[in-house]
Amino acid sequence: MSLTGRTIILGVTGGIAAYKAAELCRLLVKAGADVRVAMTEAACRFVTPLTFQALSGKPVLTSLWADGSPDGMAHIQASRDADLILVAPASADFLARLAHGRADDLLATLCLARACPLAVAPAMNRAMWAAPATRRNLAQLAADGVHLLGPAAGEQACGEVGLGRMLEPAEILASLADRFGRGPLAGKRVLVTAGPTFEPIDPVRGLTNRSSGKMGYAVAAAAREAGAEVTLVSGSTCLPTPADVRRIDVETAAEMRAAVLAELPSDVFIAVAAVADYRPDAAAAHKLKKSEAGLKLDLVPNPDILAEVAARPDAPFCVGFAAETERLAEHAEAKRRRKKLPLLVGNLAQDTLGQDTAELVLFDDAGRHSLPRADKQTQARALIRHLATLLD
Ligand code: CTP
Image (cartoon, rainbow, N blue to C red; front, side):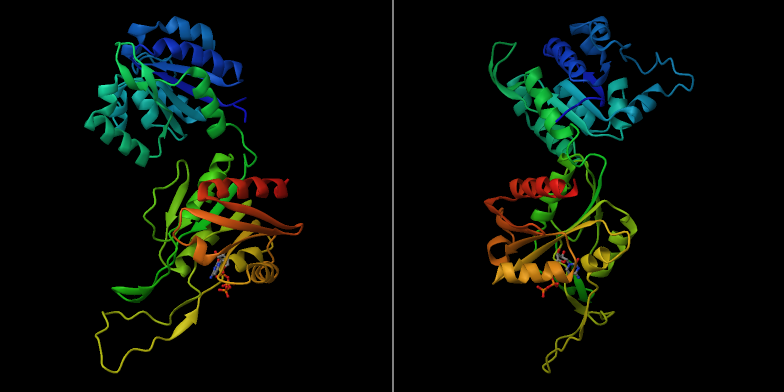
């Protein structure tokens, strides 16, 4: 995948690996990226801004206060214009500042003001890498959707050996191209539903199912990796939001339907959610008391979100999931025709629910395609690749 035409801010922080950032800058420019370099004060002690200016062909951003733009907001503008911010090397101190949302120098401010993905390639001594504070900061950054590239293990500038060395520039470039290069779904809007729905019986109880949301989240991440702009409408799960995916949390099928309809038009709709087919006719306003007479619930059908979206005149390319417990092909093909779907993904529910791996069969107009058992992220990528060829 290519980085051609992507606007990248290369952030350089203070560490001996800053000298490798010069080579990284050269490789990014060679790959066709429009590179703007921002250095921290400490970075300027290791390498001069002039080096990066020569390599990027642009003035280097070093200070919040030396801002030449007429409105004095060059840092906000630079951040808004970027497709990606890459901080390499990212020092322990910089990661700590990032984790706390500090804006105490230009690069930290660019990161805080960004509307684009942020990737960091840490470089530090192995003890600093292993320190509990660094671990906490990295966990926070992962939760904030920051992409972590490396570090690698090996000999360090201080003479120690261990984890903390910055990835080689070529490795960083390859990883960036994989994650952020223009993929087969670049420019497409993809809407994904995931997880279970919860249909209240009373304020403390409800009907739900055993969907973990793992497959839907993997599909959302794979679509994002393929370059799409992804919105994930999710029932209740314990999963972290995939990086650069916009997530809307819902509880009931009715809320899921409303959230999905509000997100249309979209180029692709992938319905992975396990939507409850029925809901209690009316949820009790107060907690139901136990009674010897037992309890009968009146259930009414929920709207079929996928069928409704697929039937619209402006229908996106719709992908359904069918979890069956028997006669997979027969049920899946019938479901595909009934809901008028160009692509349906079938699996055996008992083999898949809550598991980390899945065996899938794709059904489309050309027939069947089996995806042998693999982890859900691998399956999701294969599904997205297949979908991209059908969209073509
Ligand atoms: N789906 C949906 N809204 C619903 C029910 C299902 O959007 N109310 C979507 C699911 O996300 C999935 C597909 O439709 O992509 C298949 O759902 P499933 O419940 O298996 O199909 P049904 O048509 O309800 O058939 P059955 O329950 O009889 O197997």
